[in-house]
Length: 294
Image (cartoon, rainbow, N blue to C red; front, side):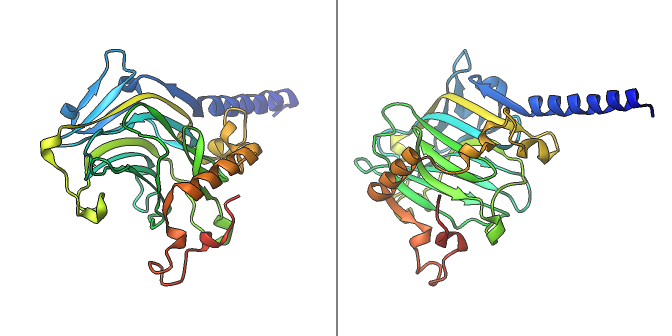
C-alpha cells in the first residue's frame, strides 16, 4: 500500500470512528409515541395527542408499562412524574434501567404507595450481575402527588447518582477494582411501570390495595434521555468524548454543593440503608459499605 493510500485509509477509519461516536450518543426529548414501546397493558396507557404526556392506569384487570425503543450504556435519564394521589397503598410505580441478560443489571427508582395521610416511600436499588440486596429508602420533602417532579439517573463509568429535582439522594460508586459488582458492560433499556405490589410494598404487605379507591393513575410529563445508544461496541460508550459528556472527570464524583445536599437528605429523610442493616447481613456488610461515597 502506498503512503497516500495509507493516509486515506487511516483517515477513513478515523472518520468512521467519529461518526460512530456521534450516532451512539443521542438525546431523546418529548414524544412518548416515537421513543417508547408498550410492554403490557396497552389499554391502560393514555398518551396526549402531541405525545408529550402519558399516564398509566392500575385497576383490578391490569397495570401497565412501557420501555425505550433503544438500549443504552451510560448516560443521564430524566423523567417528570406525578404519583398516584390519595390512598395508594399497595401500588408501585417504577422508573428504572434494566438489561436483558440472565445475570441482569438494573438501576431502580420505586415509589411505594401508602395509606392516606402517610408519605410515599422512595426506594432505590442497584442490581449488578444479577445480585441486588442494595435497597435504600427515603421520604420525600414534598408531596409527589400534587405536581410533577424530576427524577434522574446519572450513570457513568465512575458512579451512579440518583437525583430528585437535581438533589442527589443516593450514590453507588464503581469499586469493581475492589471486588464490588458495578453495572458497566450490559446495555439497558429505560422502563416505566405501574403495578400491584400489595404483597410487600406498604407496611410489609399488611396494607393492601383498596380497589374501591381506584382506578389508580400516575402521570408522566417531560423526559430527557441523553445516553449512549448501544450499537454493539462498548468502547464507544466508555470514551470521554464531548458527546459522552457524562463520562468526563468532572462527573466522576459529587461536587461540593452536591455533597452538602446529599448529606442533608441522608440526615433528615433517610429511613433505611442496607449498609446499616447488620442483622440482615449477619454483621457482615457488603464490601461497598465500608468505602466512601465520594
